Image (cartoon, rainbow, N blue to C red; front, side):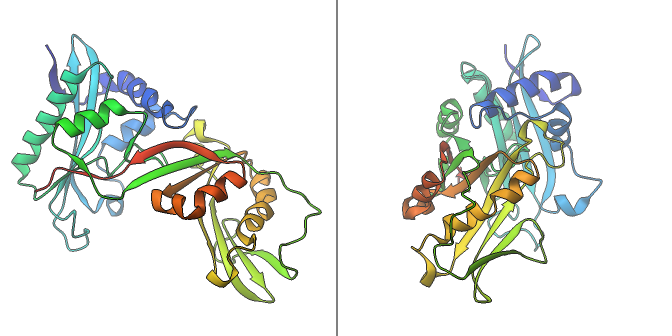
Length: 301
């Protein structure tokens, strides 16, 4: 008989295994330490500024004969003016994880979450717009078809045009003798964000920029993500596009990444960005699709 009970410390070892088995299906080798998982389940009382949107958070565990079959993290958002209009007074099934053969556990978790939300009088119910406490990954990856199926059975639908894809791979090679695509192009580090934001300039005029997040391990608190960097943003002025400036800018910043210990890169793209050419750009640099994710599910009012 599957029962649902609030998360307790005795569940943590099994919850860590459940989380990391799912995460391994997104980016191989990525996993979360037990302390990070535990901390993400608690209110951020030490720094209320980080939790301004969230009024309550509850973690529900589906258990049978001492075995954790699944878990769900449920949020109630405040009605403060600072909360985004779509989430003001709403609730969210922030994440739902369960072992693939434990459909009954998934059903009782969703039912318990709905009962909790009904008591709150929430205006709307979302699912999986928030994520596990790991950079870049959010939504429901294609490698979790059992989770997508459970949400669909429960009446959730993906929000329109919110598919994302993660590209990943090793740092591209750098040819030190290679000239810029246009003579006179130069790269410099932005003074306000040294080592993270780089500017492409032509005769003193900025024509584009690139932003890296060079340490996805968050200072070592996520050791499995050591050596990973995220390409957060790349913008080239429209009249300069199609000349190879973006690829040149990425390659010119590779020595900086190597200096700080980066060996692999991940890039998160919206499906529309991928189709518009960002996917071809990533492949030219040797990065391939890792996983696709459906972000933002809704059960309506």
